[in-house]
Image (tube, rainbow, N blue to C red; front, side, top):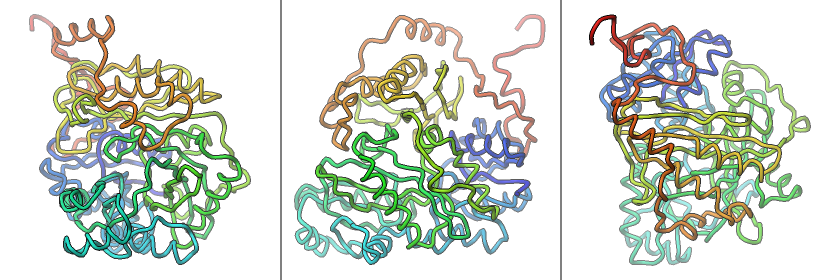
Length: 503
């Protein structure tokens, strides 16, 4: 087992991985940009290393700086989390050359599944159903327009080098195609350093269902069932749950078998997710393999009892998979809501600024994977996710009720967040009925506006304004981190303080 792991990420996922390292008795090294100097993940780690200015291209995407940090601290392995370099085969190869373990798929598998076009070709060859679309990257406008006509409008523009909704655009007709292509290429370049995109036939109002899969280095592969991920905004997931209400046992078994085959075809190892789209007739099509830990992994953990980050680390350390397919089962129902710093009433525009008051919900069956605290200044440079709120209950009906109550108890003041929007989504009768296709938000929440806040929230807002915020991290992260490069000192965790006498 490793003695020290560097976490090449930030925010809530970095905190999640650091906690897993602590549970396994492994030292954790954080890296941080200038914007994240006082970040919760920096305070949670045993060591922290500055890696550059706020723009990700000069810090979290800079391979040289991350490798240098790993070598300087003696880290034997790097966990990339998700986003940034998590699906970058070049980074995985670079670490391999340096004698540092990449906690993720091997570079060849990462290269294959990370190229959506190559992955589609491999799956089609293996007899796995794929969505009709281009077999090579889009070229100039006239060439792409001809391909779109062959496929048939509407079409989806997708980045070939990454996922997570980045670079995705819809073209309903010829007039939409060029602007959508240009926008998709710009976003793909910014997110993955590669502006190549391709076209797929748009399956209208589908269910987006993914299967969590684990594969060790000895050819053992299991799936840990599905996650329904259809509640999305701007092609990015905001609510996930398991089990899916859309699958019956026979379809679940068939899709799980297909997901395992997709990893076998890819010679894949470590954790991954095989994503599918299902049409209204329950025909399913391979979408992509996300070669990393997923944001929504906690719902699988709560219903199977398997810690996915522990599994990732153990597999990367060369341990055999201690799980058998026949021994895995789901219990109860889990739902996750992604808590974003954004304004749902204004096209989900990112929101930045100082958090003046922060209170996480708690109680039976409630879990928060957070990365912020009172007084934290939310930067504009990165994905706006602040935390993930996850609930578990014996039934879906109880899980929905538990999530609504937890969202009511979740207080974040000083910035706009998705909390009130998510509360209305989970409360909606069509959501309660399981009508959770990718068109849900547009169909039922177009033009959504927030209702009047309750008296408790107003009172907290006034108190926060009077006190100017409470600069105190939460989450029990009181580990004794060794300072490096002038990182946040222990005084940061003490909040507003003074030594005797008058202030």
